[in-house]
Length: 82
Image (cartoon, rainbow, N blue to C red; front, side, top):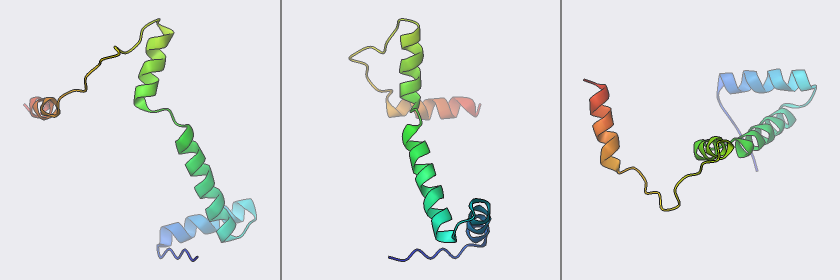
């Protein structure tokens, strides 16, 4: 399988990382992708952050909590422009 990226910035960054790591460009790209994927998988979602903060205070989301209706976002958007 071949990965061919034709972007000057991507090429420059890959070469820079390979030089720092004293590795090949391929190894540098693989390393960067693995690190980025691992970091994103470990990131806390906003809902998880809110639940953790509530739990620290002895609180929790309501079990039968309904999502905010879509039209509420539309109303908020228009209110901000006023």
